[in-house]
Length: 232
Image 1 (cartoon, one colour):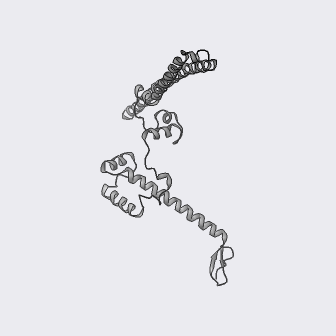
Image 2: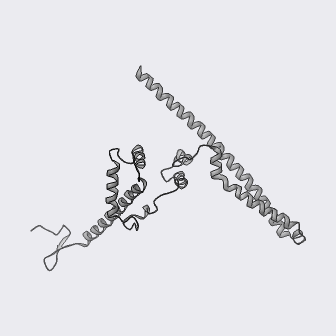
Image 3: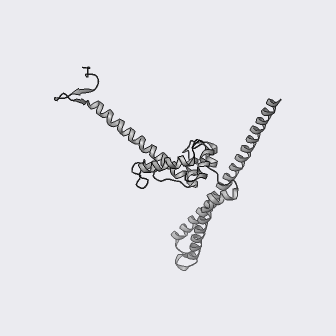
């Protein structure tokens, strides 16, 4: 009979083998880790099932390297059908909660990339996950359109204060006059600050694109010269 003293297995009164507390803890930990891995794997497959729903989606997945090119659409649909038969895609109780949402808007995904979700770099900060437009007009409309709405509200508030100051009730009210004075200064400061930020962003993007284009041209030129040297 093997020596069980150092194996973590003990014999009880009925001569049955039982696990030591340490091995029970290891067993519980292993089961929990395997369950977490299974839930994460189900979530990953579920995200692929949501992403690839047609033949055109599969072609894009092949082109981008998400799936091997030898996977055909019939094989993929059969695999997903078998996966859906074992995982409840409605309750998602077998899926890790991080995969429960399913999809993100491109603007939100770009914001996550800009704030370092995929590692901070100057390119990720400027372009995000996928740049939607390189035109400055579209960029400022998309990112600074809220400033126009803020200016409208500030203008309405200042106009209302101006009307109130013209009345007899508030002409001699020093507190209201001080408030109006502070609001006017704040409005001027906000306008100057917003214009300064917009000019700074435009200047930074302008030079970023200029330098990026120049670097790209130099790299392409060097690559073409090396190709010509190899031909010679």
